[in-house]
Length: 183
Image (tube, rainbow, N blue to C red; front, side):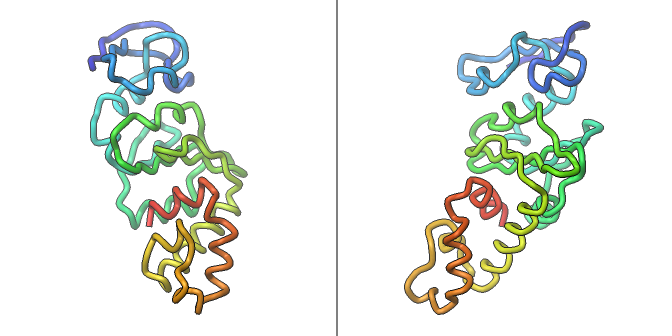
């Protein structure tokens, strides 16, 4: 994949910043349908698409275009309260450009913009996001395994009935899967 310098238009990925470079992708580029019409991207989106580490990392894109690669500890902190104007990306396998479809979204004062590589864009009320992050941390601290959070508690884990019932109420939620992956 190559990106060449251009001088006009709007970014085909985010649609928010002026296009600065021409995007040339191979036939194996899986996110092409997620782009707006056109083949020009801004500097920020070009960097995200070209640099392989953004496919294989969790990160936050801030309103000013700065991108911060996140450790797991920092990811949970950011997920609990993402800055206004940001997009938080949580990878799974890191095999594809799962974030391209989300580049046009950002967090507001009431909604957080989260993108899971497998789940896509999730616009979530901030209170709900905080509640689920806190629940995931609490349950994981007690049960010590992600499987219980995603597949349900085992028979022996039901001795923590209150926690298991709370997990049962959320475990099909795509946001819950993203948060558990972040643990």
